Length: 421
Image: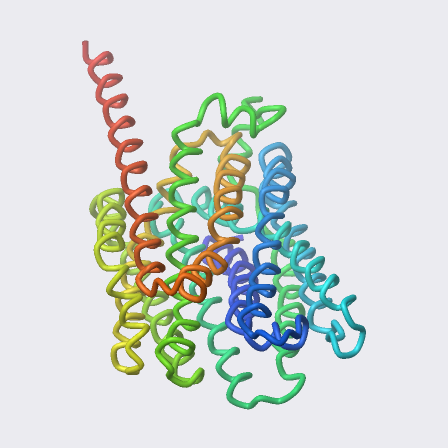
């Protein structure tokens, strides 16, 4: 399989997963009414956000399971199995009867299917990054950015589908994106069957440098990588789910603009983000990708409160500006982060280490982001809370990745001096 085809078949599956995940989040208000009916709409929305969080709690389990397979037996098997599981769960949600039809059983099944999806994504997202960076060594940042590009494109599709469903407002139209995504996932699985194993893994296997328990090996040999992956995952989780998904809730419920306008602004912001990622990754390959990532984190630290303030203005122009700023900052970090974190791992620990560290932190911060923000704005009435939450996550991440980077540079300099000496 040539490089371009490999990039396409790996990225296509990631795109579908993020389109479905994002669509579910954007449709939280509507889904809360048909699966968790309640007199208090805020309480119903908290329930559907809880379902969203439950799916994240399964990600670490998926990361351990699929990561172990990926580091022991090859990158290809878990990439096919995780997508197959995702397709089955997505289809099940698409045909799931609502609360009106079968009562509380629908709520329980929705939680179950979302948890299965979370388990599947735990083995897919970082696995795609590992596979792509091992495919293309000449342009590491561009290779690593295709996962971000695919997930951002998926979010754009998710936002677009939510806009269409909200605008047409047909009773069962919400089912179509789930069903379509599951069908396309089967197509992606068919394309992935011809994927070739990466050269890095083949060499590691032939030289018998793999590990019996890759995750334990990652803890022994690649702790800086685990720390870096956890920090970047925390930032991305808080920044994306606050600055993009929760942004829509603020613009509608606080700013008072129409849901269709909010969805349009978010779609445009995600579209800009998607276009910028490969461009900035190319720049990173020609300059210093680490420093470019630091710049993006610093921008998030300083500008996040402004982004979330613009969401409250009730003016579509300012709401759009907020999303354009958000999309640009996210593109800087997304174009560089995944290549940076994979660079800290050995071949035999890369799948397990990146997947587990990313998933466990995402389970904590991504799964809770919507609930935390709803608590800050809806119950504590702190409209500045979400913006400060984003800034805090950026500050912590910036401190961690800069310290890990400087430590590695000192080690490399010391080793070089020893060789010269």
